[in-house]
Image 1 (cartoon, rainbow, N blue to C red):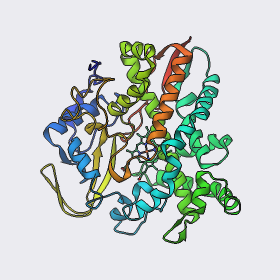
Image 2 (image 1 turned 90 degrees about the vertical axis):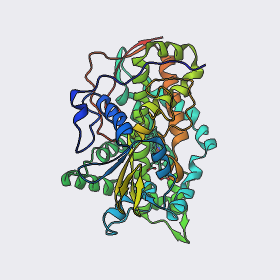
Image 3 (image 1 turned 45 degrees about the horizontal axis):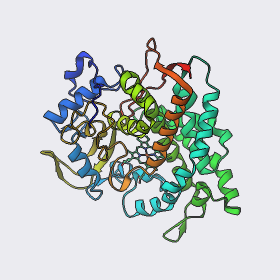
Image 4 (image 1 turned 180 degrees about the horizontal axis):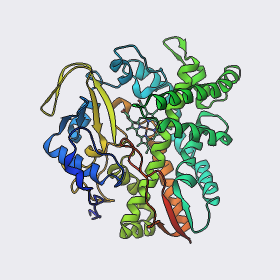
Length: 407
Ligand code: HEM
């Protein structure tokens, strides 16, 4: 039977109707305005060209169609938008097109098989316990205590670098994520960070060439594409991608699951009483609050999207946030329903670039939520806290102060 839930569309800020140049931000209202805008656009202008010439796509069917057609809709935004002057490093899977994409993805996909990922469960459970042991009694910030260090430490471990270095990884990830592509100073700092990460990994790469250890970094060091070894830049760029793609997203997922539960006390009580609902809660949190609000593609030919003619080399913003609330696919789409069919939710993308870390993210989310429920009889988001939100492309709070009571 379908379970009813509450809607999380709060009151948008008054200017919701006045966006004509570009999209609203997640701040200051936590996404209410952005969601109201996306709903209106889905209805009225399912493909919309903004003031800077970018084309925004809102409906589930259009987003899926585009993601299923990498020949017309390229991921190589760096190469195509620089007129071929720049080239994405070969480790940046997200920015590669076939056939190179398939070759690079095959190299790393064996580190992400469901079997290998579920083998990490006992270790991730212990790590989660250790992180929560360090939490102060009564009140703590979920992001600093658990949601950030957990995925960073897991990625460090998968790569095979010392987990004690996780604070450095955390700092680099924060630096990369705070990059503002329109601010040259910020872009310069990002490039500096990429060089620092590369230099850090260099030491390990050299040692692994002499003595492989079976971890992901070692696999990459030994790998060949078209008969050629990956170079150090390829390897460093892949490690950097994992750090970026796997860290903030998983962190935000956990915060978002807590936000959804906090807003719906009946749901929270039901999940507490029936732990088998935890995976469905994670899935519904991903649907309603996808960590990446949108992903990008660039056209390789003239095309038409939802009635709008689009020229070659146009940058597209594909709104996963909007696709996931499309009533054509999800009935009562704004409601949190633990029993809905969710296979088509788009938080992990679709097609050849479908998130390689999805099983890991789901596992981490489940373990973390279970651990919180085990440890605390009561968890609320501090009602006095004013939440600070990430930028437009990440849907979540930068910090989540919780008030807790031990079981
Ligand atoms: C809730 C957590 C996560 C979300 C919402 C998420 C979301 C996404 C999305 C939407 C894409 C597709 C991007 C595109 O098509 O342009 C993607 C790709 C990717 N993700 Fe995730 N991700 C998550 C966790 C992770 C984790 C934990 C890892 C690894 C440690 C990871 C590694 C990757 C990689 C390597 C790609 C590129 C795959 C390719 O291009 O073939 N992600 N992710």
